[in-house]
Image (cartoon, rainbow, N blue to C red):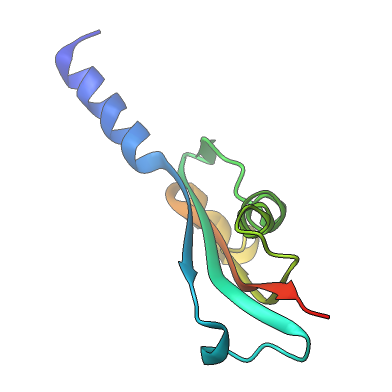
Length: 119
């Protein structure tokens, strides 16, 4: 593989797909989420994918992945019983947004408060 071609391939792979889960612990008295719930952390999950001529590189941008596989599993790893106040956002894939798949990107993100249930 020639040097310019490998440089382009490395650049595309570095920018093409990114997923991350960020957490921050919170003091229980600083955040009210409801009765019999003690907040332990705020969790934010995000996944992005590049598109080149309608081909996702590498793809898999959907709310199921962001909420169920990333957000909820990260909260469970922190010791949470539930996640409340979940907010989601995803780049649409129809209408005028289809043109973004020519050369562009698509993102999905979700965030919520991880809580422990108290008796």
